[in-house]
Image 1: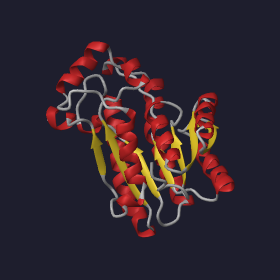
Image 2: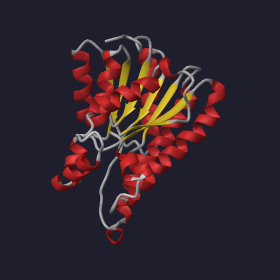
Image 3: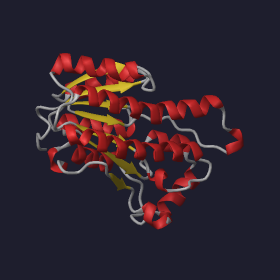
Image 4: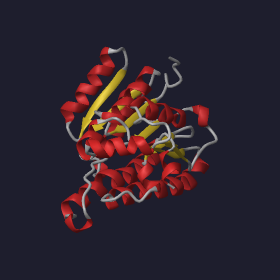
Length: 250
């Protein structure tokens, strides 16, 4: 594998499991030093240990990504340890589906905090610590383009991520910092297994032109493209990595 990130330092939220873990491993394999943020420090540390055992460089951070201080502290520590912050991937999300009538303040606040406010703070922290050549990649979702039943808050949060991405790209472009998004379809992760029943998974596969769930590596490859100089004139964009499902639904 190429070492296109050998001199780069990345911060990944929700990097201990699922898509985030795949992104961490891909960035590290291509040479980046990676900071891994998760609500559970033990899981973040396990992910960091795996990177280090494979010959990479990593630091673990535990904390609530809906709080600015969590990301600010991680960014400062990464700069102290590795000298810079060049890539920031906002991946963290907490999801629960259900009828509109059953929404609770706790559920809404947690989804918005984890999935939307963390992106706000990630952009702000990236803007503070990055120099020209920096890249911020936000994980949106095919749900940003669809009206998924019983997923009003999730669809709303992910649509909001796209708005943040476009506006931040406009603001930060003159400084040479790019901001983009990746919108995965259904990916084979623990989160999908928890929130989507097996029959619905079968239906999603049947409605996806590629006739399969996405894999973590599919998403990590797109993230790394946007994080790299290969996409040096791409900003404010969203790459759908969904097997064609949004087009099929529409």
